Amino acid sequence: MAIRADAADNERRIVAAAIGLGPAAAFYEVGRAAGVGQGTLYRRFAGPTALTRRVIRTIFDEPVEGETLFDQIEAVARRLVRVRPWADRLTEEEDRGWYRSAVDELVGLLEPEWRKAQAFGIVERALTLGDLRLAVGMVAGSDHTSGAVDLLRRGIEPKRGPRRPRPSAIERTSRIVTSPDEAQSAAAPSPVRPKKPRGRPLPSQRR
Image (cartoon, rainbow, N blue to C red; front, side):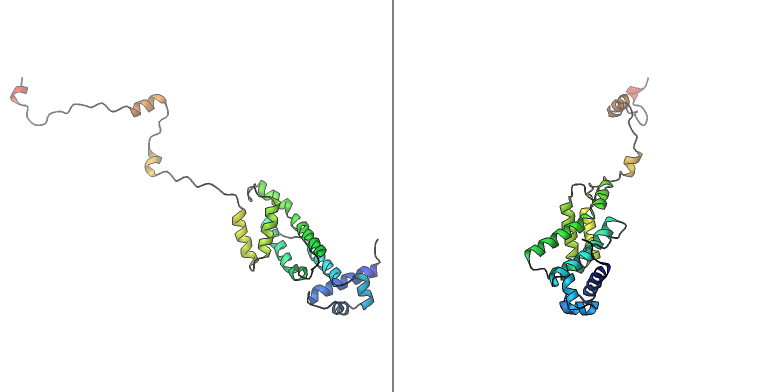
């Protein structure tokens, strides 16, 4: 059921105030910063946990920007870093399960760019979406997001075989055998020519 415009405006103000104050702020402080009474605060959100879930959802719903897959991975990882203090407030298993599903949904937004990168040989084809989720989690858990993305890039690029050594100058200038007869001729030993005697002939060799 759609809510009234003023109620929707109150929700937006409350969520914006919560994000501005941070997860350490008390529930009543959020209502005060949003300019709403405690009754309105509790009508819109049953308690701190409900507000926390809405804050996380609001951050996750922001458009994922970035021209390349790695730009988008970094954007998603930074978003996970942003919501980590909020996620720590979710202590019930049901809420933790909701958060894991929300993260999977967020990472799933990268799937089209991931598939495209695999098709163009930028990402190893054998990797799966599970590997993508693991990679994003590793980047989000790093203290240096950009550096972690660079390491990730090296780790998921296709592995190319060793390069063939460049032929030497002698090999490049050697004659190429183009026919079987020429190959047989090249393989046959050269005839041995008798050596001519040097110096004056002996008397027995004179006529």
